[in-house]
Amino acid sequence: MIHKVIDILKRLIRFRGDKVVWIVLFFLSLSSLLIVYSATGSLAFRKMDGQTGYYLVRQLIFISAGLGIILFQVNFIPVRFYSKIATPGLIIAFGVVVVGLLMGAKTEATGRTLNLLGFSFQPAELAKLVMVMYVARMLANHQESRDSRRKAFWLILIGGGLLCFAVFIGNFSTSALMFATVMCMMFIGRVPFKFLGGTVVAGIVLMAILLIATPIIPKSFGRIHTVKGRIERFFTDTPEEEKENKGLEQEEYGLLAVYEGGLLGKGPGASEVANYMAAAYNDFIFAIFIEEYGLIGGGMVLLLYLIFMYRGGVIMKRSTRTFPAFLTIGYTLILTFQAMINMGVAVGALPVTGQPLPLVSMGGTSTLFTAAMLGCVLSVSCQNQKDKKLEPEMTKMLAAGPDEDQKL
Image (cartoon, one colour):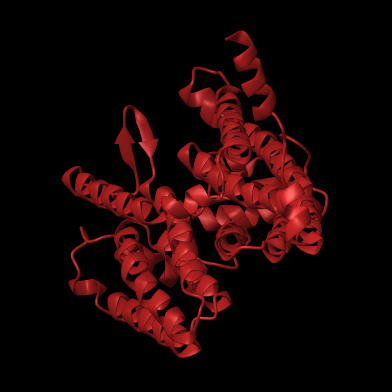
């Protein structure tokens, strides 16, 4: 029994797959621990009776759990398993999102979170995970002809569209992120451009109608009022006298942190803006990172995500099967887009969205689901390496002829 446990542990701790992705994962996790400790020090002191390291330990636990998930996926779960669970997973995710919305309506909450067994669970994170699996499966199974790709489009539009709309009611930014990722995946999957263009136009028109109709839409219906307010605040200047009465908004604190950081930053743990920001450890953690480590440090974080995006493209190109290729590019795009959105918000280039910085922002279930996405990418990379090793043997068998095959 003990020997079996040791064998399982030996298999579990093998860091298989693309080494560059592992290195990126390591440095992002290290950056997370450094900045979460700085950004949550005052919060922990106020809420945790002076235990300033409370949230650091919490983040370390979730990052370690995420690492365990990745190692388990890479060493024990075959890539084809994700194709099998894609459609059932989409149905389950839709049900979970709807339950979250219904429970949120009863408690006058937003429906963005769902409390299960004492844990705060975000249904939208599950939706992101299974949406990419579903789209990858539909595209992989319908690549034979133009008509087949049209069929894939309609299957994605029906299944993915329903899930996207359900997420939209409680979480606009995540639904927009999912929509953008799916459109890119279908473009790569050679879905006819007229279908993609029509879908984009329809989405823009629908969003415009909802924003115009906000005065007659009940505030209990989703977060469209919040979205409109954030867009208006982004494009309009707040009068100085109003600023004096209300104080600085989160985005203004973010800009102040970037300004205070300058080129080299104030140094680790020297952030002052983090003491006044409600979302310093989540939505605006990149701004706090720049305040402490400067634009050079922020540029290094940006570079890590760009390297990950490049390696995701390499892994996709090396895939010999369509489903792993689409799965890889889907998760690469959704994580990279999310990172760019978070960083854009932090430096004032985009309206506030509420998207965390993948693997860096303090999180619970979001960290675990991000780890699961990375685990899928690394699993595909690991499968590519296996296929490459088997390729010479297969070539030799084919060249040997029937008699030699029998001997083998």
